[in-house]
Image (cartoon, rainbow, N blue to C red; front, side, top):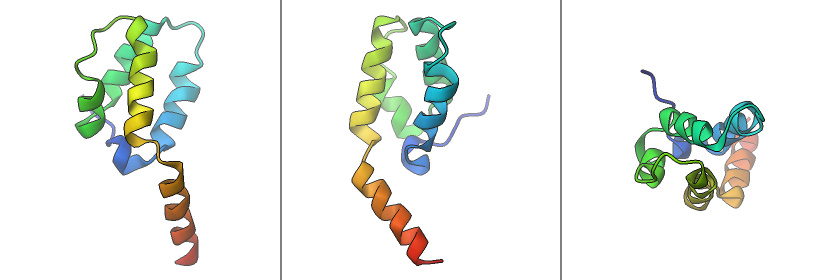
Length: 87
């Protein structure tokens, strides 16, 4: 079973992809979305939500915790600018 790189390694791109493929899928209930999210994560990101029980009510909590822990828009912008400057 292959795990995705941690959110810190991928920046925000993982959550953007997950949102478009899973989060916005109206055919999936919140519990299933949380299961998919936990199965995709590893490392520090998984540790952030690992203790949450698998119930639909915890899906929004999991997303909030991950955003608080890893979503740093200013850092991401600086990293992108740095990459552009190195071209």
